[in-house]
Structures are given as C-alpha cells and as structure tokens.
Length: 411
Image (tube, helix red, strand yellow):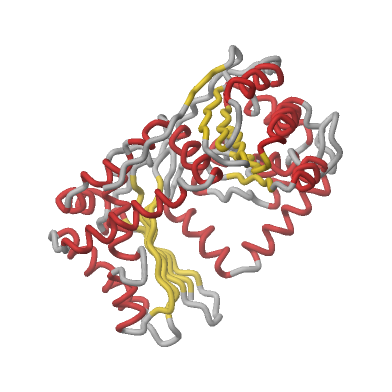
C-alpha cells in the first residue's frame, strides 16, 4: 500500500479564522474558502437561501462590480467557481502563484462587503434553473422525491436549490441576516495549496482577514432524524418512457468508523463496470441500461443509494429481487478476495489521483477538515487497508436491511 507524505501547516487568527497551508512544487496555487453553512441549516419558508447567497457573492461588493471577481481571475489566466451543498458552501480559485495576494484581498472583501446587487433578478435565474433541472425533468423529480422519501424530519430531505415559493418569499433583509450570521471568520476556514511563500502569505492573510471583526461564534447545529423502523415505498406515475428505480438506506456520517465498510459495499455492488449489479443487470440480463451505487459523505446521516434506469420491458420487481439477492450474498459473507482487492485499489487510486493536483489536494483537505480533522488524510489509506470482509458483513446486517429501506419507482 502506497503511503502519502507531505506537509500541512495550520494557523488560526484571533477572530477564529483558520488557515491550512499545503505547499506543493507548482507554479499555480488553489485557494478554497469554505463556509460551514448549507441547506441543512435553513428553516421553513426560506429553503434555498444558502444557494441564493452563493450567487450573491458574485454580484459585487463595495469595491467590485457584479461578476468583476471572476473577470479578474480570468484575466490572470485562472479559473474560479463555487457550489453549495447540504453541509457547506465552497468558493475556489486556481491562479498563477504571483496572483495569490489579489485573490486573498478579494475574498476578504466579499466576506464583509457583499452589497447584494441584482437580488430580485438573480432569484428569477435560480427559479428558472429549478424549473429546468427539477420540475421539468423526470430525473430531477426522481431525485427530489427520493430525498423526501428517505428522511422524515432532517433538513437533508429538502433540495439545496430550494422551492419557488420560498425563493420568492426571501427578502433582502433575510439574506443580509444569513450573511451576517454564517459568513464570519469563526464559521469558515481557508485552504491554500500549491506554490507560495508560506510566511509572506500568512502575513498577508493577517493583514486582510485579521481585521475582519464580524461578530459570530463557531456554529454547531445538530439536526434530528428518528431511526427508521419500517420499509417505505413510493410510486410516481409519469406515463412516459423512463423507468427509474431508487433504493436508499440511512447510514452514518463520513466521520464515523462504520462509513468505510459501507462505501466498500457500494463499490462491490455498483462501483464500476465489473461490479456485481452492473454485470447482472446490464451486461448479463439486459434489464437496465445504467446502474449505480454510492454513499453520501455527509456531516449527519447520509444515504446509501442504489439507482437503476430500467429498459423498456424490464420489470421493477425483478430488478429489486436481484438487488436484495446480492445484498443477502454480502450479508452471508460471500465476498471474494479479488473483489476486496479490486475495491481497495479503486479507492486507493481515486484518492491518490486527486492528490496530484492543487485543486484535488485542496478539496480533500477541505473535506477532512469539515469532517473534523484535516490530518486524517494521512491515515485514510491505512483505514481502507484495515477493512476486512467481516466488517462489510456487520455493516450490511446493521444498516442495509429491508425494514430500513426506502424504494422509489418512477414509471
């Protein structure tokens, strides 16, 4: 097993802003700034406000015009973007190393000086995006209903993009209050990877971020989801050509020691063309044209998700039967040595490949930091290596059983 070895340096300013430095021998640098707020933090009537705020962060500050941030990055020869999830909102850019200080200045500026230009028009943009991706798309309706079926109380059941009525209901004061509460030094951190002078960069960070005195405490909000005690099933009649099946189970958070065995099960069953369900359902029996299985890497309970696009004449119950047969095989311990090796090698190679770029390394470090410890990255390959077939059997028996399942049929 290949081990990774590189330096990580952690610093924290007096206002609670944490910085993680990852020096790499590159002529570019990637900057991540992650705010610990996503759709899980939202309240009824304001669903979608975190994603809306992400859009607003590109609409100018007291110093920058709308979209000027990205225009400056493009002139540098760099790239930038952002995305909002259930758990966090991430802003990132990769630029030539000599432009790093300009990025730091602009990020500090929009942490405190966002002016919310084009607020109403941007809400309309997001509403149209929702209509296109969800309301007018059977795939979008499928995924939205799968989340609603899989949770009863936890805010993970709601879409990150929100609902049209909620978006229309959000006022500029609401988003200013959201910005004031969550976009603070103590509720965010920065990761810098690539070629840079660490001492000079830290001095610059202290200069531009150290003076930010937005009041705010570290926010640790916890959300409840009761243990599922019965199988749930939903059928959506679309009367179209698509036939989509989804089966989910609630599983522990990414930081839990039981997550990795579940992730390995998902890869054995559906992680590649050579996985069990792809061979059975797609290649051998021609019941589906696509199948997939994955585990969500969440801060709270995520989902183990199986989905399949069925061929026209395939029967849902037959596909469901084959899924449960394979799950039962895992539960019985019928796991081949070469399957374990193949899946471990897939996880190793994916992890190591991402480590090669400044963006990939910054993302992985950001991910581990969000989930409690950025230096877990050095132990991760060993954690994978230690997993045994018995761990998979135990996880299957505990989490992947019918009375904890949610089945959605769209036809």
